[in-house]
Length: 361
Ligand code: DCP
Ligand code: CA
Ligand code: CA
Image 1 (cartoon, helix red, strand yellow):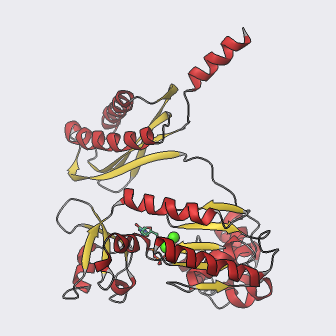
Image 2 (cartoon, helix red, strand yellow):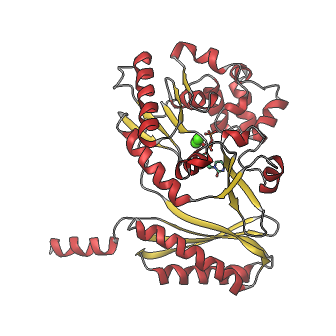
């Protein structure tokens, strides 16, 4: 079962302020360069009726919603994380095994709970929907299938407040008429390449020769597309490991290679990254910077420290050093910059080793 919250950021805003519910609501990532520069993160279904979509420039969304009484809001990530956390805690109890993917969706393996019976799975899904509706005032769409990929596509097919069930013997009939872009991993480029091969539906893909697909897309992707088109997916529902990295990225007010201007922004990103790791009581061992240049090329530089650290000054100093060295190596102006910490652990390895050393003595 795949559970995905409907128009999540915008729905969370409606939850915060119920008077928004009958208005078009657009949640925006403002780049800060000028008043309306930036992109739409998501919009409620009322705003979508006017053609507003995720990723669209804000000025275009404003144009489409002129005189519609629309509300434009900046993203409030911390709040969405907390809403998401509550939802995930609720969902977890309904699953034999649980896997959160992204902020607003999760896979629930309910095979044992339902004895593999799809009618029982439907009853369970209705319970989940009702639980989220009454206790958290949130609507979601659910897909149920014999595996993750079918469940995911099923959840996407009927929104908002959808429930789509695809039993094993219906998989072929369900998938074959759908456009290939419905498959996870098929973006605009892949879709175009498939089009040139005469493949427009998942059914077309299922009929294509797997050797030919591997020749065009490489072995891994070719095999994946072949299996996906047949609704074959052996991936288990699996609890994800701890977060692997924490990063923040931002756009400079103007393209520049002025060290002080760049550092001013990067230190702000360091603060954000630092507060996230401090909150989770994490230690970092690797510090990276990312620079997106005027020509949109992306460069990264990293340093791995001798020991896991939790010190703000070390983060800041390492970032400063990496930036200085990077500016030495390039003569281009920077457009966007980012800070990332990875190799995260819960405790200081150094201390642990010391303790076990003492014990062995
Ligand atoms: N998101 C974003 N930018 C994107 C896509 C998504 O910032 N290009 C954010 C905002 C979404 C959230 O991620 O609310 C979840 O993404 P979904 O793709 O699940 O989209 P929604 O939940 O907004 O809508 P839907 O009802 O179609 O699931
Ligand atoms: Ca969603
Ligand atoms: Ca989602």
